[in-house]
Image (cartoon, rainbow, N blue to C red; front, side, top):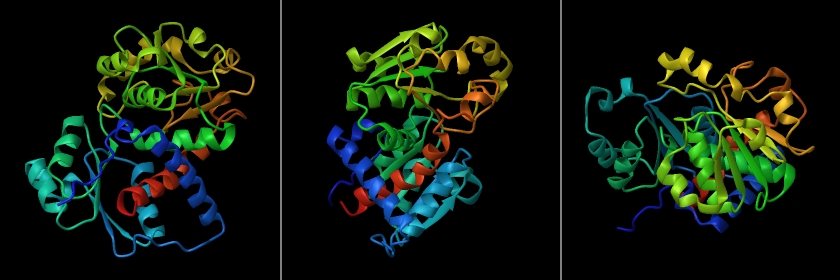
Length: 302
């Protein structure tokens, strides 16, 4: 049996494949705007395994499969034997004999890897504690739509070195842009990813320095899912890392702002920025649908 192609990380794609996916996502977006019916995944099924809650990931994958002519099945821990302790390897073996592709959104990245290792069909990482590659596809599509290719550009990541930051580290390496990461000590992105990033990434403490001359400024919540008990502590630690008008003034005059959402206004970002003219967060959120449709087509049709 041919080994399936998985998407657990941006490193699972070559740079030219990422660019082709972004181009294809734009084509699919235009087709939808023209109300064209395109159903290459007719009679195909996507199993969606959610161990973490979601709005954008669930809706975008479910609607995407419907628009491509297929069907999506939502599976939460309460709906499956995973919630009663079935090994994830066994769930992968069973599900992959019944569906054509699986998306898993979970905590430990090892669970995504283990699922993929035991699956007969493509597995997509819908988010893990380490990486969020599907969101990066949407972010990149949004940047390309509004500013062209990101190669040679400067991106500023402000805040926690979380799964989104880790995926930006991988994107910088794959697509040849410079990433300046401003975060407090102890909140850096994964060391193993930084070590392989080489010339593309720098970690610094001053958010204004990171934003200086940036073409794209990105942030995320200070406390991710599973870190709610740390909220007060993190608010204190990250108080100097808010993306506000003063910080955006350091960036390029035509810089854009992104945030994967949900956002906490007046914490990691001011309302004046996220609701202002430089913000592309709504295009970014919509593009989860189009970039993931392109990804599903790529994995299942080629």
